[in-house]
Length: 158
Image (tube, rainbow, N blue to C red; front, side, top):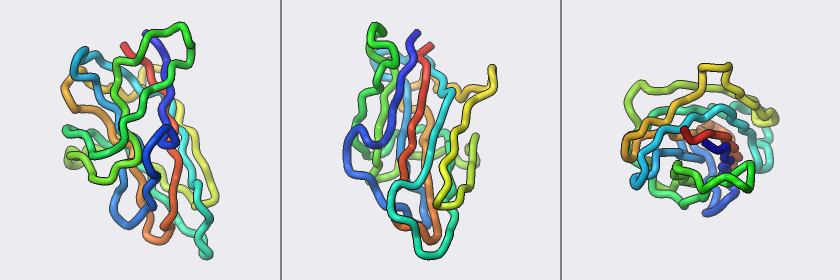
């Protein structure tokens, strides 16, 4: 079991937010190994220039059953002695994956000038199932903030 980090600055082109959710980071079990993993830390915040009028950005973590069209990103081991992650990461989606209806497990609304760090209480980690293409989409939207955000995740392979 190792600890890994993924963020949407690892590849692809960051997508501007709109009134519809944009997947910033998606994490699923690797098809070849199908092992569970758990997300225990998420950091998020606006990166682009702020809107002239203060506004909100809604961040969401929902279950997905099909991966988005996005850039593959290799999870970075926090300990360089660890093996490669058994989790597949996709960043900066251009086409959304399939999100399970009413499956949001975490929603945070922030002012555009704020950032947030969510750390799971012990036993409350978000479990990525050992099921092909199933996992979590970390998404964001805003009615008025039309620039980019950064999402950073930390996870353990189980």
